[in-house]
View 1 (tube, rainbow, N blue to C red):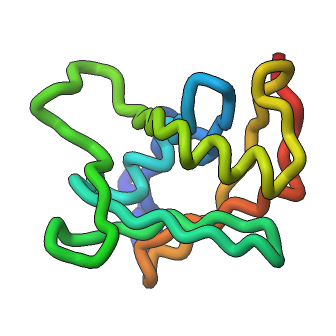
View 2: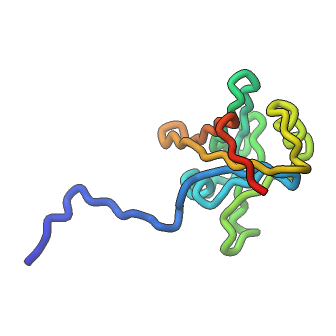
View 3: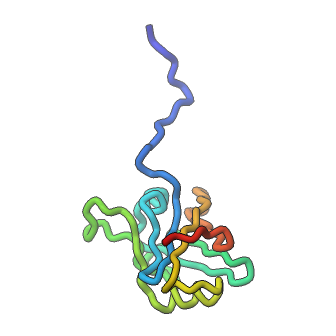
Length: 129
């Protein structure tokens, strides 16, 4: 007996929910974010202070404000990415009125495959300790 497998796609248990955590130590994008952006080497971060959203967009090295994202040569099994920019953390902290010395925050991301970007709505952040 043989089954028709037309229309089936594989489900990956390794990706999980894409999210970013923001703490006093940095902004950490989890493995699912890195994976959905195809482990891109560079990305751009856009901040909308009015809507309190952050967009992470795959970028080329020579694009304006492209920042090193994932470096496959430096990573072993760790596929997450951490940005430690104090200015970035300060900007997000001021915008959200967060005290990152007391709490961290986790924000789930929405992915647009067509645009190769994530959108994180910081107003939906959950406190983590």
